[in-house]
Length: 398
Ligand code: 3PG
Ligand code: MG
Image (tube, rainbow, N blue to C red; front, side, top):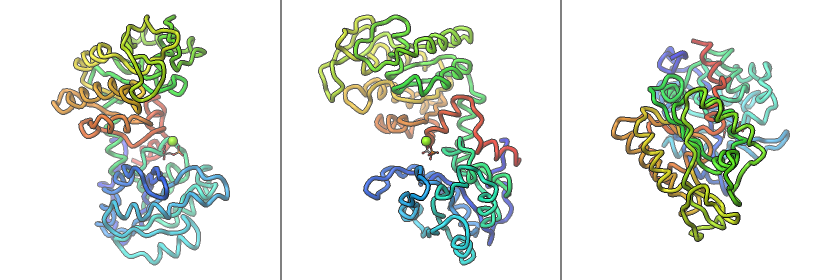
């Protein structure tokens, strides 16, 4: 690996360790609704505390506007404590006298969450003065937040240049999994890309056709491809103005020898509602007042047959309107097949980004995949082949 991990750290007993975690978890009515990212932070935080370090957790929370202090991490520290099963304190600022006094009073093995780094404009600006103020609090820096590594912020990139920097357990696991999936994968490689909009994934698709052997397009974005090929998609969600872009992607795929799988059989209905009357049909038979809401059974079977010939699978985005039954069928069926192929040892499967984790959890197979990323935007930028500033900053320290 091109970066140092916490296994490469010198003795940290009695030292102050700044750990950049991603505590940006969803909350509703003051309660954390998905603690996955908190759980992901535990191995590194526990390891540091067990080695006798004074552990400072650094994170952002939401996207506060200047002066708005409502997005406080004060509510998240107790949730992290609950997940860790040990006390976690909270410090009302991440720099300055308040933070410095709190850190000076810490005992080895204790853990404190610092207030939202984005309360200071220097965080997003990666301002050297703010970086220096953060660096005063720690002897070592650990980045364990892959899901924010697409941001060149003070806490994700700046600190790695001024303190001895290491990748945390989650960061390291993520980078190893991603390397296996796209960096240096075993071929043949299949990518499933779904979701509503081609416009948000143009760069992903353009990059993937040069990397994978099979590109499987689902979700409403498949409608844009079908329409660009002259197929009438009725009332389906579709970005008609993107036709030239998707035709360009198809042309690039052909040059690169990437097989693009578009649905040829679909499930249509007149409205998107639970158990709305629906039927399966050939893509050429969609009526003017119908919309495509899922892939048909035969189309899913064809995708499964192709995945069975592959060694590696990358999955981003649902195949259909999976939040609404029965339009979750294709996503659930294909995810279960991929999970089973992974478990039987024939397939490395990596999933991530946006709705993907929710879709795999809905199918009950997240645990069966080789790796499921906690990242949204960072996973997409990685799929676009872009260098991630937080990762690059770690790599230059090796
Ligand atoms: C996320 O939730 O995607 C990460 O925490 C990054 O947050 P951001 O998109 O506000 O930078
Ligand atoms: Mg984001």
